[in-house]
Image (cartoon, rainbow, N blue to C red; front, top):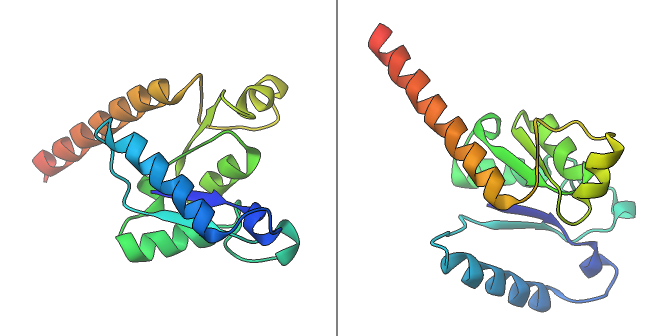
Length: 146
């Protein structure tokens, strides 16, 4: 699932229909790689709106967790902004700061503390695959001990 701040809607720069077009295009591109999103959760508010859904506040993750039935502590938050990493921290997720977009500057400044700092999404996927394999092995060992 994707959680995204889109204050451009709140500021009138584009509307929800345009954002839906962008998201459909993203989903089409992901589908060509065999990836299907369970949902896209959007905060359309500006920072001045003081809503509970704007990252780094956990509103979008809490909503998605209820609707999709997952534990945020077992999730991965991947982003290139401080608010992404802070969202992960607040929800107990494993965090990845990606050195694309704004992430390179943040990584170089060293002001954001993520669990992992990675060059791109491919590297992120490799690490997540390793972490999930390790989790499965630990769960298997725990089951055997019982």
